[in-house]
Image (cartoon, rainbow, N blue to C red; front, side):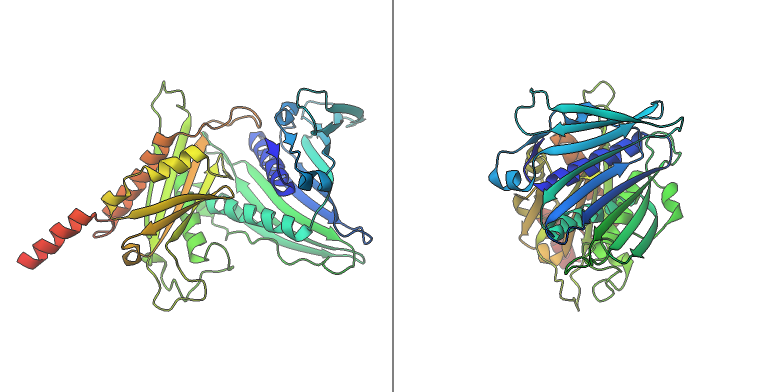
Length: 415
């Protein structure tokens, strides 16, 4: 992966840390710390991303390169400090890695290790220093965690604010249950911490708000969790507000929800891959708040339980779906910074706002930096069609094609 921005690097490292936690058999913690304590240079930030997962595999960094664009080069020297240990190691290994230059060149420097003195634990910390506006980083990381909550994996949330003489620290913790084949729950606690000195701009508001705890999610399938998460996302106007907007959504039952999961048969090259799709249609409110609905749909796309940019092949698949057979006219599918936006035409106003979430994941746990998901257009199209059919079956008179509407109209006229 080419690091084209500091924000993209942070999200990549957070994703890798989260996957390492999923590989662990124990309760894990993922922490993101932004430290801007230098009063002389408020733009200098020390970023630390740590986890207590399975320990790092250095091969994860093999395809990580720093772009030659001047903007990134001016903000970061390309140096990563890595500390890691596995449960069976007797030491904490320490490395410096410079990801600038040619990936084939030797970029790894081994530093002295630290003895664990017989302790049994595992974990990794990756840290680096950048010159960047902290508000930009906070906005991107906040948006990342907000999207993650749509998966409805969190089962517990907490807010902790620590105030010291020379710093303010805010932490939001979220506990995730992340098991795939067995229904035992492995937990991952994720938190974001901001540290800074007493200078203007050092005090930051809540970073993100976790979804309400719901014990029933332990027993729910991943598809049911995704449905519930997207419903909450819609009711909170894309998590732009902390609670359900009663002005636009007086009743949760007004949401029309359809869902479906597509798999490949055994023997297929992507047999272990699953694609889930959830589609929600909500009527345009009679008394809307300032966050008005539109004919644009943002597709929330996830890969292996993490928010992800949508591949171009998947974007092409969205345009090849027979939307007209469901009474929908797709004007365009656009990629806006890795986010898919669908623009609707025709009589979309008769339906209301259309919301879409897609989740593609391996049915078996994968090692971070290992096998990447190969986007599968047919699998996505099948999952979306299953969701459309499910919604159409549950809500009579919804998603009728133009011909079906004509037949319905004639039958009414002759009755």
